[in-house]
Image (tube, one colour):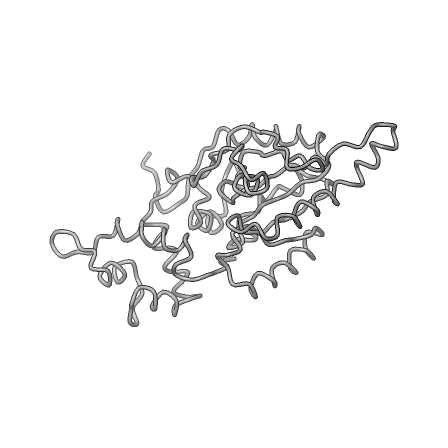
Length: 279
């Protein structure tokens, strides 16, 4: 059967195993840090995370916050804190200014369980915190900033972290890095498309052209001024218009859609077009 390229498809066999392992490891940790992409505060949050975590204390990090306007982010912090009943903090893996605050909050959330352990006569130990999140939201980059090293495997592609691994942050905190988890099935194609926009889905799961066209359609409605200014467009906004504005032409004088689509996605992911929240 021919694959429908208008849809985002993935068949991640390791995801079910990762989710089972995650649930097994929950008994080992005192609290959880959930990392989400600040550009997609809802779509990049694993829909089953609350069910998986149960009553485990959670800190939500809106990572890549440098790619979003601060005033918009502050609104979402309030929305998420009220909805998820968990503290929410902004984070940028490129900036280390607030990492100590994150560490202190993780230790604070872990303290009730540590106190329970000490009441049983055991010695105080470092807080044990699990880091979870969908692929490419920046989990490993945050851990590497915290440790000031590269003890965890990181990369720009979705799904680089394959195995769970403990990382000592300081004498008060140990972190458990985990592979990125995404749903086994993606029935919400709107959310799936947004994940493709920010590169949280394997490039094998979609067509650059389809995703770039969807992104341009969305931005032309929500942020038309940014698109026009960045690509030097007049009234019409399309992938073809962007190709012509950049003089990306193939033989015959037709727009180079493949090249243009790749550049549009790159420009958006690097924040060059503008700093947007797409949820």
